[in-house]
Length: 227
Image (cartoon, rainbow, N blue to C red; front, side):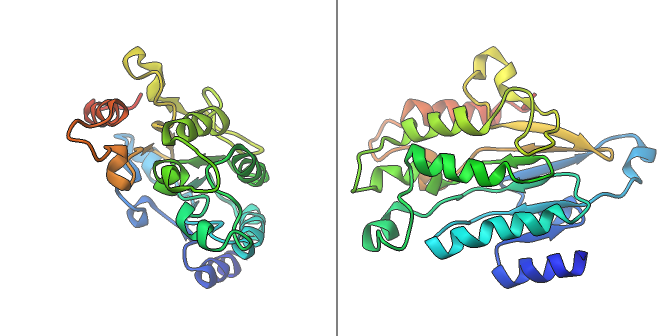
């Protein structure tokens, strides 16, 4: 069954099943070994996927991928961002892509994520909020999209999925209360962390003075811990 899962992931390119932290993109998911040697020896697997739902056709594939993941003995699943299309391709072909950056699409994606039998964690991508200013069909401010993501995809103290696991959020620090998406959790003697830093200059803006959210985001990343 595991080989069938890997075959499915290879077919779709961006869907990856990993045996360990070494194969994960460092910029979005970090892992640190704990000092307990016995805990470190415990083997486990987890799933990673990203860049999904870039078209109506791809939207039909995501539930199948999660269903196949559900058959595997995974400790958790991480979506590394871009759960929807860039607004610009949508503008060129609105009949072939769901409108990104809007609440109804976020609800659709969350509903699919919630079919995961494993704990599921999202770290947002640029398509999901920073690029939302490029949507022509409807005016969406990037920070409004980010606020919706934070509200809809980050239940307090736990992951998404049918069997959520405990997580620790950087928002527990009063100085970074809004950064609910920066999470840590541990498994098998390894501590994992998601770090929210995306494309489009991490929403720095085009003006000489960076946007306030960019400055706070940079400060949160430089804090040195997310729990």
